[in-house]
Length: 390
Image (cartoon, rainbow, N blue to C red; front, side, top):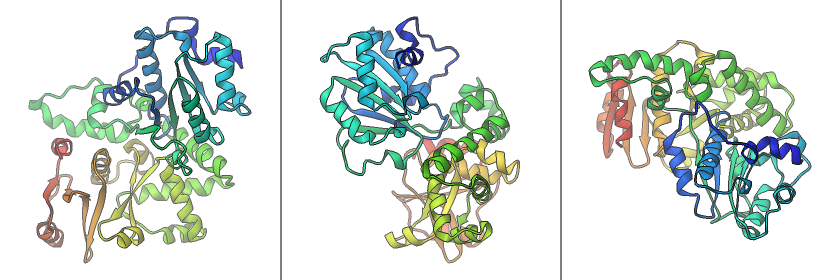
């Protein structure tokens, strides 16, 4: 194990440089703010969204703060060579290598922590017994759920999301002056194609996105849940992308794929928990929210484009508005008498997406008559800034 740990931690032997890394300040600042407290910090989100890079940036920050390089440990828990080692065994081996005393503070970074059995209890024991600061990542939301509450009061969770349109322009070194706002339409089409996964933004590659989707389906769904048929899961995901922005019928998908409704419901949950899709409930009383059909949105416009191509730019625009809204708001869709308004937030802000179009007819009547705190129609790329203001 010693050789493996040295491979994971090059700063033990040489200067640690991060070249060509574009810093996502909104996440890095939160991580820095939590360095001094003892809380375990979980980073969660889609695979390859940049969680590992954020951990490496914090490691570089610690080194720049003159924290002893031997007191910083990074390890990828899903490494095959560590499959029979628990977290305490990894820490013990690390401490032996550097002769670290019991009372010395260490900074530990566990990548893909959910590959470790009973990791909640292990982390609790590490937290309680050692002078330790822990950062950990996971690509599954459900696997982070602490059913036995081992880490209640001991942890915080930060979801790392794909780049939004403004971050995308920063990564692409694009600056649009106000007098040139008309150019944003063209750049948004590029963003729609590339999506917001950092590596793909810097080096767009259709095969990269396809491999990512296949990796998630194979590793995080099929292998983890002990399933057998990769093709059914892949076909299911294609159907989800075709239905993105629409209300979803679990039974219809079950009929198409010739699987049971229960299996269809379970597969849908697997896609949601791995961040490939997001589901939006209907506005209403609790039973309506639970029982009504969910609307579906893609996790990333580039992944949506992978399966949908250039069809229906309005669909991408609405999908993007949802991704922006979910940063700060609990979001629902409004549906009454066959008419639908795209979004209503928990604090009753009504939002309709109309890309280069107008709201009219029965839909406008519903929009005008509904009792809301604020009503917004977003009909162009240059009005997206409104989402940052609500």
